[in-house]
Image: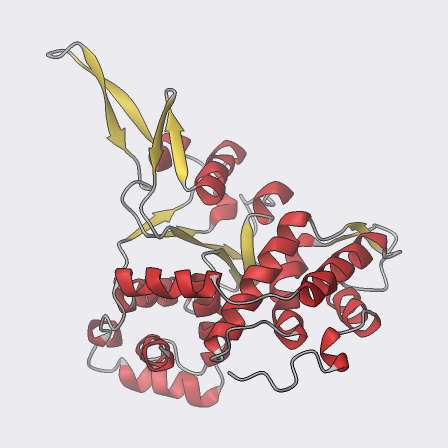
Amino acid sequence: MREQLENVIAEVEKVIAGKRKVIEKILTALLAEGHILLDDLPGVGKTTLAVALSRTVGLSFRRVQFTPDVLPSDLMGFSVYNRESGTFVYQPGALIGTNLLLGDEINRASSKTQSALLEAMEERQVTVDGQTCSLASPFLVIATENSVGTAGTQFLPYAQMDRFLVRLSLGYPDYEAQMKMLRDRRERNPMDEVCCVLTREELQELQREVRSVTVKDAILDYVTRLTMASREHEAVEVGISPRGALFMVRMAKAKAFLEGRDYVTGGDVQTVFGDVCAHRVLLKESAEETSVGRVLDELLKKTENPDRHGLFAGMKK
């Protein structure tokens, strides 16, 4: 199993060099069956990463470039009247038959189009003219938004932000990574060399194994205390939602699985805490001298980790 996942990382690194930690986080989110928001600068490789991932794990892939004129029907589909049959015929949208949807610059779409994604992301289905259509399995949304060039953009509603399992950033490559990128692209496109090393069926089997990872009550208690502490913090207006707590457990299970364990530790929760929860916490307007990152660090320091009690001593990987 670990060898298969290492192969996935190696294939993606053919086109995204020097970003192994971020690639591992995205792979963890994929195993946890969650959606990913990439919030970063333009041109750092967000789209390239999504395309490489879809090729590596054998997923059907579609890209939607979000603009103000993209309609909900472009995603969900619409019904067209057929004169010959005298009936309405459903025309599928971009979501239908897609395993991995890349929503480029999602914050450039209208509120109505953004909200059209909510049912698909949460329920893995769309409803058109009263008819419900299930989406392909697995179904994953990787959405991007740029932190600069915000003319014509709008903030994602909190309800939609809460649907994303994690919010991640790639950041600029370091010197060696950028030099490798420039050398590799002098005469060829490295994307042409990305191979499928994990089939869709194998990925689904890994996802089922992740679901079976053991989570003791002590870990659930830890997650609950962290989320409740976020809601009671003096600088916080909106704390971590119950959905955020569920996502934290799912991401921690996938993290443990990646490390070859069939049980979750408090350390797994701490590792995924920031990526899962930073976009779920809203600070009060009066909290000008702090940041979400500082608040989350403070919560981790003040909330007792069950690992300290030797809960997992003697357990094997």
